[in-house]
Image (cartoon, rainbow over all chains, first blue to last red; front, side, top):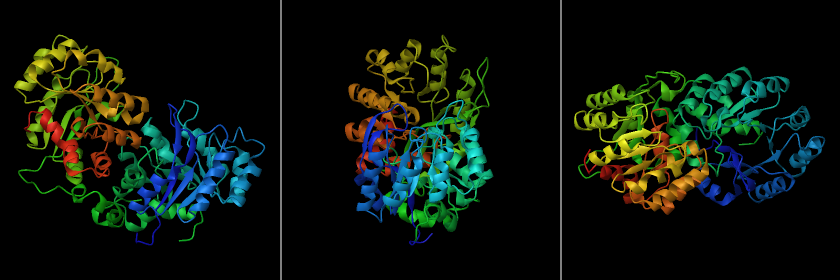
Length: 252
Length: 282
């Protein structure tokens, strides 16, 4: 990877809401601190999206405004709850992308056919973390969805298990990504680096993406996890930015 | 994809290493005045479970390889690691194993004993005396169960610290006021993997309240709480730990180094404080 290679953080947060991870707490994520750290460590672009909210209309507008101010630095993702926004997803997501310039969507809830039809039409990636409960094992959440929408690029955060709990879900996520080339694994918030090492051994570089979940997590530390993989430069470049550049259809 | 050797890591390293110092990449040169870098929380050895307890299901009830710890230490510039057993039904054998690992790797490990306060009740005092006085172990940890009075009294007799990972930080209040002369190390900044941010807050507060309670940094994921601890606590109260070998000490020490603390503070956190708690000698 040379200096021309983009480093893109695919999963950071901005604005007001509550934390995704429980127990909930109120948050107001400011981009200034993230931008300082990004400048220091030459993270070129940051994909920002709202924290959890009851409704996302205003939050998505705020994200779009932040991105308008720093178009070379911030890339906005919308957030929508596919169940709450049922019946209006085509309209709101199309407006988010075509009018407000947002480049992807995070699903707060299991993506529906309605959501994925419009996502496929818009050609944007979907970030979706199902969390963990007995009825939301990763295979059930991703296998049929990824097969039904092979042209949609999915990003599964935390290698499938936030805090590596349960750690076995990392292996399930890796197996899913092996089967479905449209599933990409983001690796923030792991308990052990060895799970990312297994993912790097088992998967093509095209399916790992650097994301930090900043400012909850330290983007500098999450990026360091990729350095420790000691990948060949061309593969490392894909994981830390090249893949997101492709998924977002960004020019270099 | 195939991972490969260190030379291939150079491009991303160029973005990261200048900001964390050369010591992150290789063992630092030894000098007589250098404060050693000590990882105060590492598991080692084999699990031997019994009864209805599961084994061979999780990293912490199977095996933690000290050779992996040594490789990570070398790469991360960690001079010494404090090692103690993974989950066991009882700990007499595993503590002997810890002492043996220390003996085989002189200068690299400090051994702590581990015991179960209920399953080994009535035997803890004699076992701990033997383990400290004959096997050379230097502390007790990592305890997940609330320490018994038998344990606490023995810690006091032996002048050794306890590394305790409670279910809730508030459990410390049950015994700390009665043992002001025993040093306690609260694991994981109060919450393993930042599972509950309120426990991080409680841990920081507990450490502020009691001069003999220290806080250890392993597995903190929610970065603002590590930053809060560093901001609000004297550096003398914070200890670097990794929870290796399952957790990667190279990542865990990077979380401290990336804070770019003044040298004196960083030295205390990365080893000086534990050295003091061990009486000033390794």
